[in-house]
Length: 404
Image: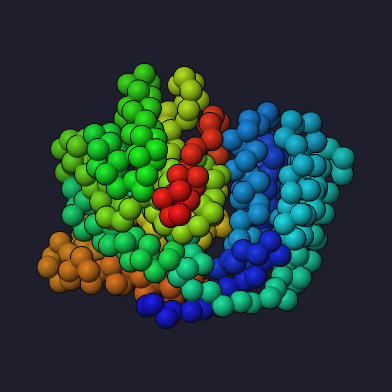
């Protein structure tokens, strides 16, 4: 695995991608239907829809949309605007163009309505797909990868099979010079000391502790936690038990920095992504759904998402392939078409944690080289972008000091 190489896609901004996607991005919910209709005729090709539903964006939405539209897996972008929303379509188009990607904007009100916007959009996408066939290919290795992880639909098996297997994968990735991102700070409450011990610098240790304290306060204020009825039905008995399993996805490597959504690590290592909004609780519940967190992991540059599940989750995403790692052997056999790896073999004794970790790594390389994941084959492109508010993190400054 150390010498694994594959061909990726070279971008003008110097980054490398593992997919060559045309994005259709709506800038307000009123343009969502038109965007979906534009993309639908290209159902068997790499044309995917993302967007922001609010009429007035905040800095979080603007930052995330900008990062997603210039993601290394994206080759071209069609922006779809109603025309009267407050999203800065001109600024976003300029940013995409500066990244070297082809971009165009369809304004529904200006072009004459739904049908004309769809026709114009489909014509542009067809041309973009033809142009992307000539995208320069380039060698990639583990050092070029950013890998994110999330768990969803957890049950009593998640913390003893799939999650620790991903933790081993993360340790291996960091050792090879890749970048790995874990999140779910709401499921790290009580782990402040453990996270702090793994921080590369004292300043980062304090910041990690503070972000977990913020999550605890947020949940207490909102009267909401990340322990769902489905978790209990799956055999999880306490929040502590669930959190132990979630924490195990991070492995044992030193933590290089703390990220906020849209922060792309400047160099390799292990990072914690803080998804709980800063400031006084006001933008809904944190961890409201897995799709929002996948979007935020992608906005931090994740090429691939490792998604562990015990009960069974079918979600995927646009832009970054989602690999499903099933913790429960019974769930895997019932939902095998939606899963990529059967970590339930650890439960039955058929495989060790290290053996499943090795399988995940091999399939991850295959995915990076172009092999579609189960969610890609089934056409899953779920996407959610919420209103949130964040202050800058120390993140990479702390890790740079630690590496000096």
